[in-house]
Picture 1 (tube, rainbow, N blue to C red):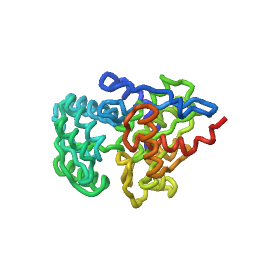
Picture 2 (tube, rainbow, N blue to C red; picture 1 turned 30 degrees about the vertical axis):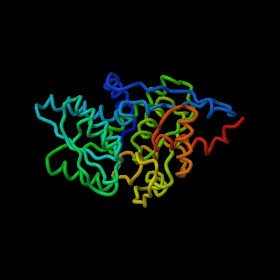
Picture 3 (cartoon, rainbow, N blue to C red; picture 1 turned 90 degrees about the vertical axis):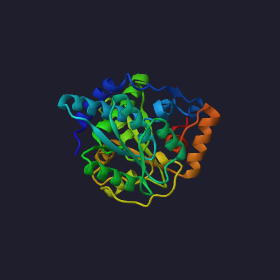
Picture 4 (cartoon, rainbow, N blue to C red; picture 1 turned 120 degrees about the vertical axis):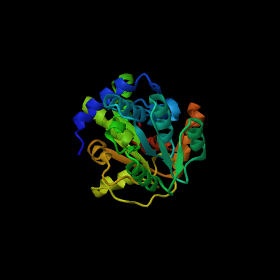
Length: 303
């Protein structure tokens, strides 16, 4: 089980380590989402992060740590990773920056747009499996067979610590924050954010949001253990898929996420359109999930 106080310290260290290599993304007030409520609603625009997603935070933290260890030991580092797209793009950039070589495995149904970007960035792409869980298993085996280091998209505390730096920025940008809502797939992002925020400001409420079509962490926490579920197609491809049985994020999410909201595909689509129409931002499905969840439960904050 993860030492969550240690994770808080790791997140603080990760922030100092990676801050020169990433963007501190805007925390933008949403007047349309705030309208009629008793508070204020802000959107953390990780869509404006390098590669268009938060994953670059964890990738840089992991690759920079690997580079430091390699320099200390005098050994070369080879890595293998698996992703539906965002983590792969992030690792490609982080690997090039830190001069680490490796292979990237993607499922056969990975987004063509994301694959094109990975190729343009110079990533070494290998296709395997029909979902991310199968792909991750194959990538782990590849790492084992070739004495390489596997970089999980979520099941790695150093990745989680990198993603948790979003929480550091949120608290700097909005010290009075009361509630944080975020999308949950494998739990690396909201797990890291919640571990930091709950340590820094325990009164903050954390709400986990997932697509109803693929909510492995939600169902696992309800069951009290990691379980395999049927994953249906979802617009939130960045959060889709099962989670590994020994996922370090399970206990973190179980401990720190206070409430869960599941959203439909129609609600996700509406959220994407809302962001385009009202905020002039183009976002992907997983970024639309917490917007959809907020709209679904907005009534509780109506004046």
